[in-house]
Image 1 (cartoon, rainbow, N blue to C red):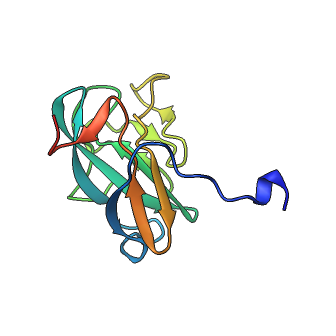
Image 2: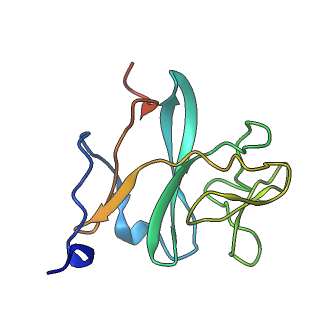
Length: 134
């Protein structure tokens, strides 16, 4: 087995189950969840794009406001990009990088997630913790 074929080891922090893999349909509705970002309450979301589960803080890089059009709806009409419903800033779903708009080079704040055995797990970081901790 080559290095590229080996499965990634889970991060060192304990995992928190977010949702079943089946809940995240390709380019569909996101799973939203509560976090503490630098000790402040915030929302985050996980979605499936091109077969990968990605997650970000639900905050536009232009002005820190929640971005979803409706609960869990983050993708533009063509389901190609994450788009802020307030400012129209556009982000690459796989990287969180700003594609166009007032977000400049900042991009979205990535949340570490991993999918395995039919479940999506979140790995809290030093800056982004579960909302029930502190």
